[in-house]
Image (cartoon, rainbow, N blue to C red; front, side, top):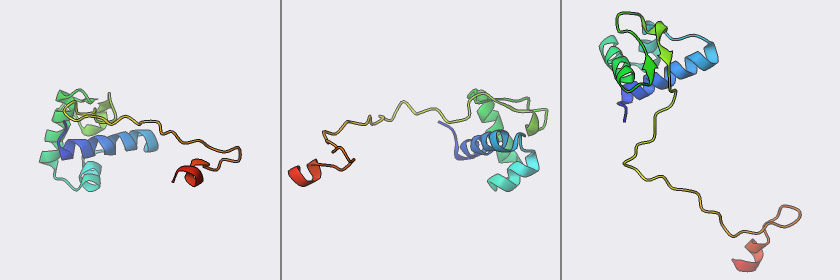
Length: 102
């Protein structure tokens, strides 16, 4: 499970790469995340350790490559699966059972 700063940076980096076709610089990460450079670099190292990005700490953040753009689900929490409900729909898209069962 990622820290808040790492999660936020991953979202910012993924958005920038997908929508603006570039990776954000350190000043951009500071501005967009509201964090200082030291926590940003620690979060980037965390993302490298968790294999979310490839990045050399001796280079600027713009050189990072995103491996996985979204946080993985935490196995400690159960995921609720959607259960199909027994609702019948009429020919015109109306819900018949609303009037007959409830």
